[in-house]
Length: 234
Image 1 (tube, rainbow, N blue to C red):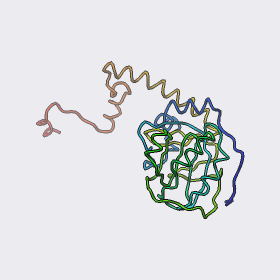
Image 2: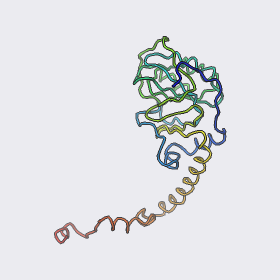
Image 3: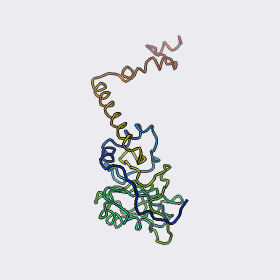
Image 4: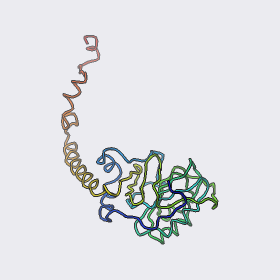
């Protein structure tokens, strides 16, 4: 593994594909991708209703040190999201309003961090979305060099620079950059299929009948009785 390095240029997925994934949302994308890529559920948005899809600028930082978050600023392009992994478990509030202000000026639309953030009131007022491991007022220093735009692990999931991040109230899912277009198509197919199912369910069709589950349940041993007294005959 290469340490203490900044990669200036990365490849990103097509912007329209990224936006399409964002409209479909985390749950649909995660299911369509084969139920992989979902970060651990402790990654929560700092305010409800936050949602986005963006290309990842990755940052490897060290516990209690946010120096590399500042280094990453000049790497950002319009529509990017910062994704911060730490070299060891950490919950310090390494991100706040001032960094968000700087990042936004350089096109960054949000943050995913496996550490902590602070200034949540100000970030909410700014509508700068953050998904973090923790919220903490504990400050950080600038002493240790990390890396930018290298592979990182965040909340149990590997993230490469340029991967697509989809995040909303359901969590955070990572779509590999090279698979983004195929995942977008599979996600749209799933959305279209669910629209048909939703209409039938609204009209009163039971899921047991809609999906042919009755016979499957019977094969698994499920039995029906009309009254509680009938249990004695089983």
